[in-house]
Length: 99
Image 1: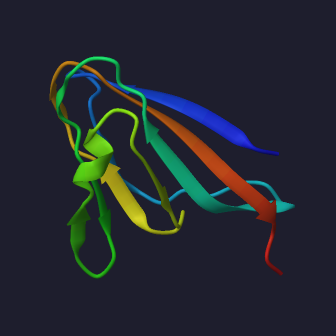
Image 2: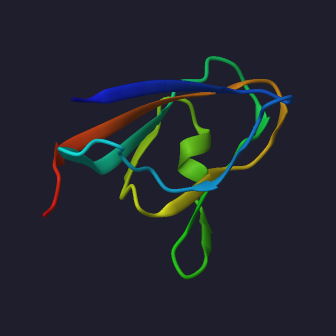
């Protein structure tokens, strides 16, 4: 089972705090997370950051059409959008659960 989600971040709901992606399934795990910036209009804020012993910002994901692939267990977040609307498509790449 593959899962695709779109997120819209605006000033009123414009952030997503630190989290890791995981599956509730007993038969598969999320192996990779693909994030694609599908915004059609300019926006401000909404920077993507992840934490791996220190915090890193990925400025490339602020550009519409750009994408990144991350390991789902890395803690990551989206900072608040301060102007406009940020849209992303998230694709979870799944595989058999590790035993």
